[in-house]
Amino acid sequence: MKAPAAPPQSLTYLRDLTPARVALGRSGASLPTRALLEFTLDHARARDAVHAAFDGPALVAGLGDLGFQAQSAASRAGSRKDYLRRPDLGRKLDQASIQRLTACGGSDSGDVSIVIGDGLSPTAIHAHAIPLLRQLVPRLAAERIRIGHVVVASGARVALGDEIGASLGARMLVMLIGERPGLSAPDSMGAYLTFAPKVGLTDADRNCVSNIHREGLSYDEAAFKIAWLIREGLARQLTGVALKDESGDGTSQRIAGKAEPV
Image: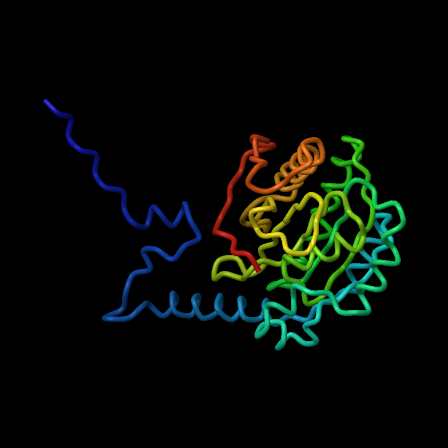
């Protein structure tokens, strides 16, 4: 005889497993007031994250505390409005940045250069970029991987890192950037890794470690994966679909949400 089927789990049980909106209940034909107010608040937080002002000088100061003399760069998106309406402008450096970075390109770029860009959530960068680097820098030092140039870029899309890396002559580039805010994570940050960056590359040429935030991938977990990808990318001289993440779990992982390119 077949064993009786296990009783179905209550939908409310799922709320302990995901930040997604499930089992919200109802009030007549509508949502309960609490659920509606929470949705409205999270939507407002996501909008605020997109439109937050990017504090580049504060990041430069924080990088200075870590021993880095960071440079500033900007895309051709002259305003936040231009950035949101014209994604293509966020993928190209303005002329002043091209000249400044190209002038630095002859100096030693180390094994890896780091770009910190505002992306679609400056809030994420303000919250997570420096804490992540505090975990990443010692891991790279232990692998004898030298960090060269560090750049803080405003009005940045992911592909802006390609032009920055090409201007600097970077062997490997890591771009930390604010990801598109969601209702459960308005401050999620991603790290995009590109070997031999140059203009015209696609997402297939990059590796991504995403969902770095308090309810997602921790700084320690993210630093472990990024360091592994940098080491293997340099050794194999490639990144992207040809470089699979076989790092395993540096620590236990709990990843919430899904990242989208910016």
